[in-house]
Structure formats: C-alpha cells, structure tokens
Image 1 (cartoon, rainbow, N blue to C red):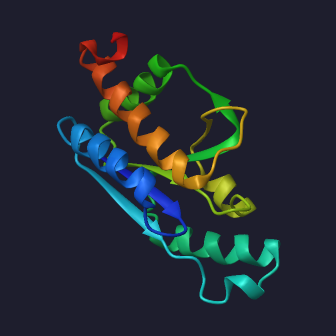
Image 2: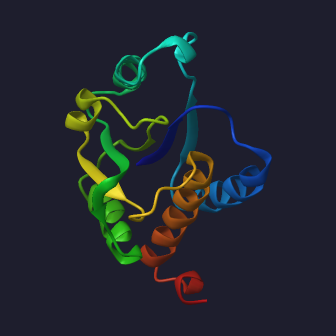
Length: 157
C-alpha cells in the first residue's frame, strides 16, 4: 500500500520543509510515500471562492484513481487519537488497498464533489492551522501511526 499526501497550493515553505522531509523519510521505512503539491488554478486570484473550490476540486478528482481511498483533512471532520489513525491505516492495509490519499484542501476548503468522494474526513484539531503547518503535523502523525502499528517506542517518548 502506498501513502500519498496531496496538498493544494504552493511548495513547502522553508519553515516546514525540513520537518516534512524528515517525517516523510521515516514513513518510507513502513510504506511507500509521496507528496503531490497540486498547483492552484492560473487565474485563482480572479475567481470567486465557489469557483476556486470547483476548479481545485476538478483537478483533484481528475488525479484520483477510482480505487484510491481518500482521507480529506477538514476541521469539520472526525477527530482521532493517534491510535485511531494507526487503526485507519492498518485496516486499509489489511483490505489490500493500493493507495491512501490524504488531501489538504485549498484556502477555502474543497468542493462539495470532493467532500462527497472522500471515504473519510479527518480533523486534526478544532483549531484552524496554516496549510503549510498542516503538512508537517500530518507527516508527523502518520509517522507516529506507523510506529504504533509496529509497536515501536516513538509514540511514548
């Protein structure tokens, strides 16, 4: 099974890049992993919020494969403890899924069509974070989940 982290927006900012790379490298010891930074539409500054979400959503839906398990990160989603994230990943691996895609939406969230396509909607916190910081937290939490699955000590350090 492959873990994919998708984020709409700019490439990693320097203040998160090192951490994202560190945890991504650690995750790779458990599962193949890759980042996909989805560019914003060229005319995004001139689009309404609704039109921007629609355009971004079209790009996401085109990139998804039918069999991909989509986890949407959204503050209105279900909050999980780290053990719950581990269970989510382990359960999908036991189902022999090919890909889990973790999606960080754009500045205004995602279109209704993307939200409907999501297999699971996950809230990291009731707080709202900058998207760049969400990338780092996501990478760390997925690494933590992998260490829990393997019963390794990282989770309790």
